Length: 402
Image (cartoon, rainbow, N blue to C red; front, side, top):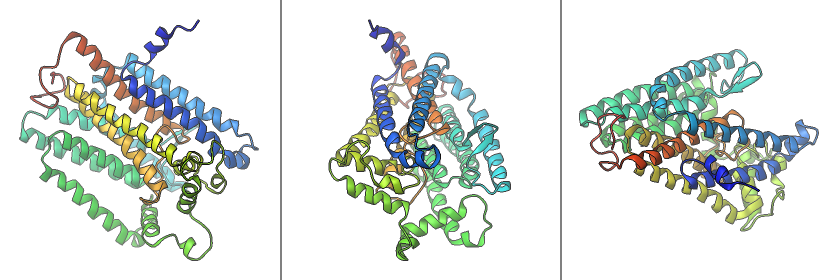
């Protein structure tokens, strides 16, 4: 007989987020199995089950990572190692860029023998941890928050600037998440205008000067995607073929209200990124408008529960950590959806926990693990003491209660 008590003990922390994760996992397996059909015939001799089991494996490892984080890693550890994570990610990003240039690759992925991963994924967690630490120890007054702003801004420019050369969209989303963290951390709006205006100016500068710059990293790709978004794809204008965006819109049109049902997608056979960047479009084709709203609702529920965790936090660092990681996951999800429906230009962002992934899924699991660890730690703290003030009030450092 199944001992449900033992099973429920595995799901420590916010139970609603666990439910969201389980539903996202089910959706991932269904749509990845369907969207990889043509890929299987091209690369796996038609054995579609290979990618299904691969995705099952990554999700299972992801759940193990989450459990280990909750069970064995105290939340304050992330604060202590934040600078190490940032420094390590910077080194790995530069290394991947150099290796990519020498091998005429994008430099987005660093290959270490049989193992490969994207250093930008590590940088996302590292920079969020660093920003959370700086904000938590600089909450005494306006002057200390100003100091935190400049420290975070300088480090963010270094990290996001390095990522920019290999993955523009990831750099932009990470920078935006950091700005949101500083806004929640009571940094004055006049200071937050500095990175906002700077980012707009940089994007304009890249767009104008890209044709004059050497082909390093993804700078030319950024301009090309902006051009396609503004002026439409050149292939479409010359009738030479359809772009990924065009196929995505076609899939959404074919889906209608209730979709074609599981495995019913036809557009997937013509899309190179059906199982990754445009998986949301394929999901809409198979499950329709109704299914797309359900999937979007799951991310919104996760955002809401992240806010509840922040509200219940009794210390500053965990609260800022949840703000950053929750915001980053939701921003990435909304960006993927926006690209799929044609609202945003192509970015190459996977749908968190749903797209067929590798190490990106594992780093997403680490983000969920941090959030659930904070939730679990807060639950334990509340059993021994009640918070003495409202969140973000009267804080000096992360070791003091809210």
